[in-house]
Image 1 (tube, rainbow, N blue to C red):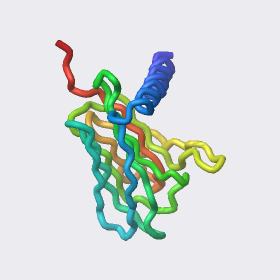
Image 2: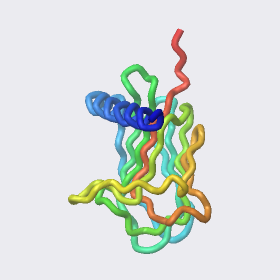
Image 3: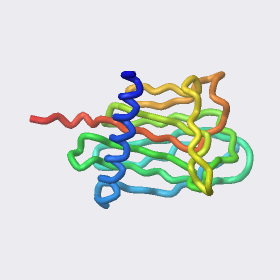
Image 4: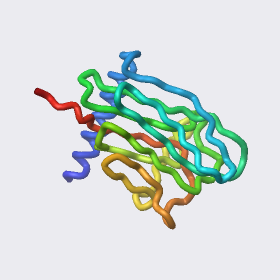
Length: 163
C-alpha cells in the first residue's frame, strides 16, 4: 500500500511540477536535437541555472530522429525536472545504451518508456529490470534492456537548502 501511495504522490508531484513549469517561461526550456544512429556514443546536454541534464546514448538502425529535451525548475527552486523524448511516439532506433545524468540535484523519481503517447498511442513503460535509477543517473541495465527507448522522465530534488 505504501508503494501505491508513493506512486500517487509522485504522479501528483509530476502533474503539479508540469503545470507550474508550463506557466513560467523562465523556469522551463525545451530544445530539439537529433538522435543519430551508427553505434557511436553521443551526448546532448541542457542547463537551467546551475542544474544540468545530460543524455548519453548509442543507437543503431534507421536515420536521424528528432527528439526533445525539456528541463525546468519548480517555483520554489526545490525540484528540477528533465524529460527526453521522441514527440512522434515510438522510436525506430535500437538503443545499445543510454544514460541520463543530472548535476546539482538528487533524483526522487524516474521512469523510462519504450513508447510515448502520440497519435492515439499510450505511454508504455520499460520493465523495472531494464534500467536502474541512482542518485544522479538513470541507466540501461546490460543484458536486460531490450533496446527500445522513446522517453525518459526524471524529477529531482535540488540541493537548495532553506535557511
